Image (tube, rainbow over all chains, first blue to last red; front, side, top):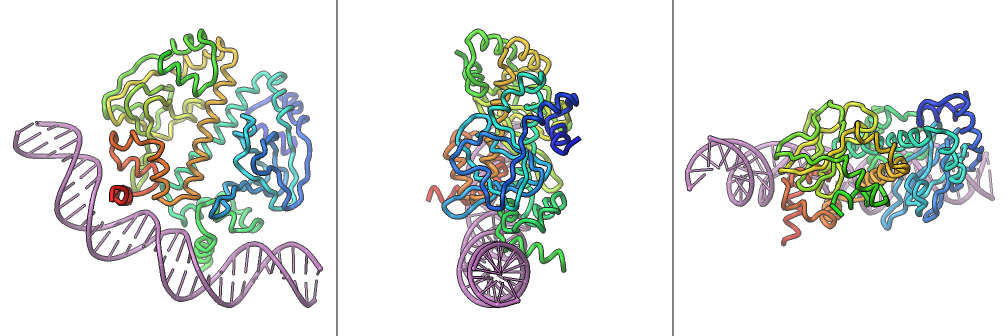
Length: 190
Length: 190
DNA sequence: TTTCTAAATTGATATAAATCAAGAATTTTA
DNA sequence: TAAAATTCTTGATTTATATCAATTTAGAAA
């Protein structure tokens, strides 16, 4: 089973092997160079991609600063969910932090799935609620944790990120400045 | 059209009047007294309710403190979404802050809807993504705003809450202490 | 490699927000 | 209504984190 198939199973739920193959056949390999945009500001996000390798940064520019909302990594899906589902302008910019390989399904193909996978609606719902739960956890982390605690919590679950992408983006995503991030980091090695 | 019908239309999408009536017929009026629990810790949340009047607090107890995650108000739906959909233990406690009237649909009735409303799956998906977007906005507010900005932003959109529920819960929900909340409040009147 | 650019670190300082403690105001209960 | 309980406010202080500025380090480009 390919990694894509495994992840579809993991995120979307249990499927017959034949269904799985029908689905994965709709995904096409795309290669992004470092710095390439997966999604530009104000576009509608008409695709959902599985990250095979590399890192994608989800961010937005405010008057004051650039804010990283998330960093997509190998084995996860990436899209602007509201934009993808509702066909409305994307709220995020998504850019490759490294050379990146993704498997992409276009919206036009995606909507066909409910025709030949009977339980597709159900699977899609589970996927979206998983996304929802992740955000609930993140809000909770902001209501209950200090910057240091958020750092440790995130580090425990995402070690691989820390030596592969600029740390300032992780700092932003965790809601702290690069300086604060750096100081927390220093304490650990001491 | 009842308020319940209006809200179903608003959150779940456009429906035929007959469909709307079929759906609303599945909801039953419940009355909660102040302090009553809508959902206790570790239970599975087997219902989705529309708030007709009153206020419900969604919170959790941590070792250090009690954290309010949300306050449900008139015209909105309330449930523990992941628990309701996945039948897993709830992560939140939900309690009435005032006497409250809700229209409740049980999970067992809810799952019947997809049988007689053809596009139910689609509507449900839209509902969940709306919830998702709301959380995205909230995370963004923690990444970009100070306590004071979060206060003003929330106040602008939820004035009615500020003289009807204990302010400490709003403070908690916005990620600040009651003291900080009180001081921000004071500045405004000066 | 050398040069240039961006990222990370560090120190000094300022600011925001938390904590602690007391008292006032409000709400609930008897 | 009076008493009790809870909530809110206020001041003093501490702590966490941001900001500013300078320097070092790492990475990219020539």
